[in-house]
Image (cartoon, rainbow, N blue to C red; front, side):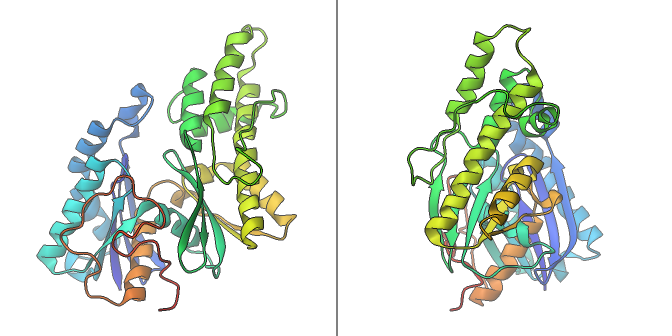
Length: 347
């Protein structure tokens, strides 16, 4: 079974062809990142225009690399939320067009759930239950999976990736901030500056990163240029964010009594986060599942894989229909179409 996955949720135009939910035959990603750099963040209008220009070419290239034609495709899976509404509509519109023209089943995919799915591409899939951590530029949340998805906690302000971007801007660094700060942090002392950690209560699983971002701003304001070493600020800020992410994730495991953690999202590529979470989890006999580097950021392979699993699980000719539309604020556990359920669960 060949699944064509399409993701246009933000600034990447991504298309992938996956066979039987396991073998990635092609994984095309066109990014408009360079056009957003001078603005210090993604400009929705620019992202939408680039999707319109790139999506047809991306589909053609994905099919070519997969040595397939549209008539060979058995299912089209497309992200319908969350994301930028204009960007989402570009991918949804072309997916519906191909679905109608080729009489191909269509399924709408939750981008957040797909990020967790990315940890299992070319990897062994653990059985439920597990705790999932989605950590990216736009989202930071914890979920519990025991057949259904249950939202445990989410950020109350900035997402972790967003905090990295904002601190990078404060430090005069380029966008996106995550990779730049991580690179600088390698030459810094993570214990040099004790930036605040917002835990929001003893048993809270919500996140807050606006405080540590503001603390960096105040630190620069209150110290002279001679006292400031950017690498130390980067390392100390990164450590503060990672402390919160690790502590909350392991607390969720304790509360839910599970021994598996699945991580997804762009910040999952951060090597320091990987090292800390794997190390701290191992002390509690908790196993951590990460995606490979190419599947951390937005991609369509994760969309195609989740689409395959959902289609096989529900055994319907058409999971979605041509009324499928963008849901920019879609979250875990919301009953839009079939989502909020884990397709690996038994009927």
